[in-house]
Image (tube, rainbow, N blue to C red):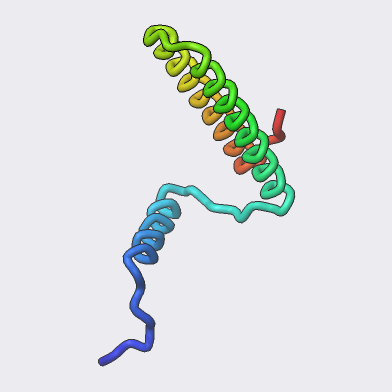
Amino acid sequence: MIDDKPIKSAYELAMERLRQKDAEAGIESKPLTDAQKAAIAEIRNFYEAKMAEQDVLHQSALRTTLDPEVRATLEAQFRRDRERFTSERDSKIEKIRRGESQT
């Protein structure tokens, strides 16, 4: 007997299993409102600009020195700043997704 249902891709099957797992765990997914989508887009744009600015400043600082120790210090600082920006961005986006007001 042949089913009339189309064959599902591996992606669709995986997403179906994840949704089922979430439902069993009591996690409900709510679609984002237009205001939430706009706020998330604004946050992403802001942090993308901040990271681009940091990249320009970092490249400029690297051009001013050839000392390997100074360059290593600059690289470490740059990585820390990027991680901090990424963490802040993700935290703010998660708050918006949960419906909390952004501060």
